[in-house]
Length: 357
Ligand code: COI
Image 1: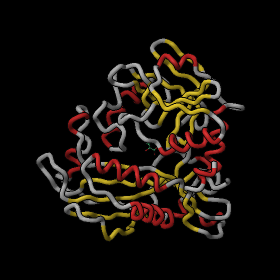
Image 2: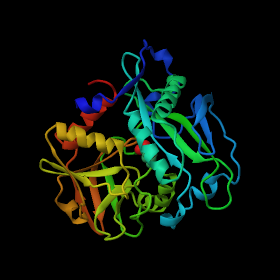
Image 3: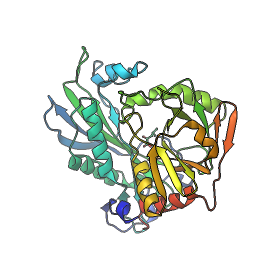
């Protein structure tokens, strides 16, 4: 897909040898924190511009007990009302090409998404150029932690938080933009094997008028209960339904969802309750380029029984095939593997992300 691959950003043209990589077991990389050498931070006071960003050794940060992020950022269960303030994150990946170049997948899209989220949460945000510059600095400063080609990626985690002290419910007087990174492998313990999802009927991820569509930290703690319960029952993750009709598909705790029926790929329309996934958006563009019809619409849960394939997309997840979905006491199985639409889209996307196309 020309449109998607033109949005790649190369951040270091240089020769590469295996010695350039940190000494670790690259063949058994999972999605877990491996502390790297440097982090980046930049502050903004009194709603002026962010300035004086700098790299420092990766380590603990100092935060006031009354920092906005600690007091109001994760106030979750009434999420429609309480989580108006202070805490956004992003996730993007750097890959090492065979020729040693480091390549970032669409960092501008993360910068734009953080800016939109910051407006929703009443926070100032670094400019797109500042965001991309910080991400490039982090990738380069930690380049020995970017896995060898084909072994994984460097997951880069930008955070934006209200670091200023505040007691009453109001925007904090100071904000910190922080970026750290960790080498990662496959997100799910299943590796590349198909996922088994469970349709959650008690809990909901987001509500209309809330902030489900932005990448605020407060969208993640509330899913842990349903996720833990599903994992204890042997499922990979939870598929949420909309909170109004309890009928339409929303998303999985950690990724978006797409279903395939013949030549048509459908995914829930993002209407404020569903995260605007960058991988979701890229796959829609790639699928259309490949001749699929893509529909963004409300998808009743009943359609799951007729789908040929289901798959999920996300930065951490990339594209994961879904082998089965359990809704109530009904389990539906889907086509995966050789010849699947998911497989075709996966190889195109991964080729672009790793700089092959
Ligand atoms: C990502 O895909 O980058 C995310 O932020 C999801 C997170 C649950 C790992």
